[in-house]
Length: 450
Image (cartoon, rainbow, N blue to C red):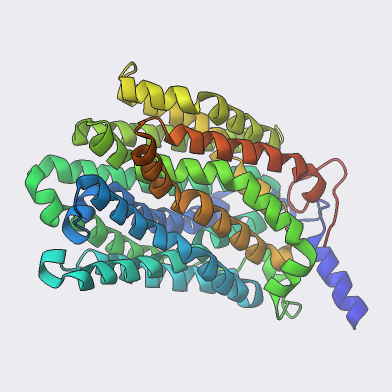
């Protein structure tokens, strides 16, 4: 019996092209599955990022301080708490995902997160409830982070296992959709700042974004109920691990470390570009708020397009090479980008569009590279642990660290040092991808480390 079980697991985790022909192309049914899996990521990432988009307004309403910069730092600290809950959420949700299936995690995480997002839009102000208002906002932020810890890793695991031979493309679609959620968030911010008087935005305008996000999550829950379990996981019925996290740590700890390093630059970029930039442009560089939001929205849309293109190219060029190219771009052009913004020597919209397109090299390739590190039986757990640890360290903390660097150094370009450091870490981590990968992508000589 043990020999038969081992053979079955080996067949599921094999990297030879034994999948049915239908998995080598993406028809209408395949696109529906990928888009529905991506929709939850879109709405949940919207829910998560909307906090950063309205960080300055939330600071005024919920976290007032002795100065605008101190208040903003308190708001970004609350933003970071959501990331602190992500590793725990990833461990718990991926445990159930690897034991009982991906679909259940999809439904549960999006439902709970939608409720938390709606609640954040209804939190009383500091003037009304005092410190209790701040504590309630932080608590709901923790719930958001816990749920997101399983959502995006689950979506990646699901689409890769549904269409493994088009893994670079479908992973690109997932993160293009996720990025579109950021564009929706910045678009909502732009609409709020256009239709509502500036003095009313800190009072109640920012709440509109959270209410819309909560309602959108309910819609995602209803649509996702039609999803079936991924084919690869379905073939493992009866062979699931009882303790997938223990198996992961025992057999693939090095892959987790490599995954964290590889994700350092894209996580830092995500935290700075999506969440830190709106407040940075207005509070530090004194750009007009509406101009900053409009420029960022255009940049995010360009970024989503770049991710799709890179995902398509990933079927023809090894994704690890695309990832390295993106890391080199950030390493070389991080400081010139911030210096140009501070000196206003480049059009703001053009600068953010160029940055978005360039970063598409990493954000369009890192997801498939990460899933490639782990076999099916522990893929959800491996992706979730590496993804959430990396994003907690390098994305959740980056707005707070960047703001602190600016305050301590007095230099508006100080965040560039953070960008350069994480880009270098990604380049170093990528040197081990070919050695430890091969579970999804077709390498010339796949290596099975499981």
